[in-house]
Length: 222
Image 1 (cartoon, helix red, strand yellow):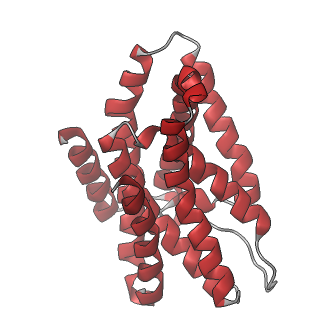
Image 2 (cartoon, rainbow, N blue to C red):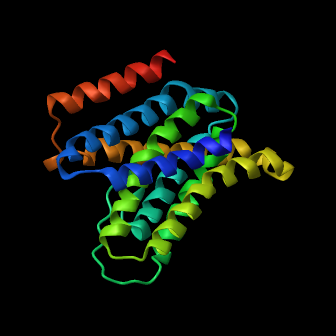
């Protein structure tokens, strides 16, 4: 069920992209902001304190490493992980750099979700708008349908694969806490960037603020 839910989240995002109308852009941005606030809240309220109990002071170094790693991935993905793809191209070739960077991101974020249900909810909510943005970008860039579907299928499989490997490879267990810390850094970077960049001119309106507050409240209450 874990693996299926992660795949279905991407499929749902693709469905949203197909059915999205221009007038619904505001609602979509609210969903993106909600996902960022929820993921950030779950990470801070539950997963980060839990992680700190399992390790020593060096955990902060790996969290910072995760933030830096996401900055590097952003260089190749052009911000796709947090909902902003700044690429303009008419190329019909497979977007290899974008695909690889997103797959690395998705693979790593699958590592901790197998052991934390609340974090799984955060990743699922995060994946829907991101998958939709990816689909919209690929469709509007003129890529063939098979390229779009191949891209999204590969992306959808990466997070379940990360969860599977973290559970099945016993050699990883010794370093799992540090890998999880790396992922926490990735989540912190992605979620805060979503909150700062999901508004026009980087300004919060009342509806967006209320959406963020609701997301925080839900994450705290579960």
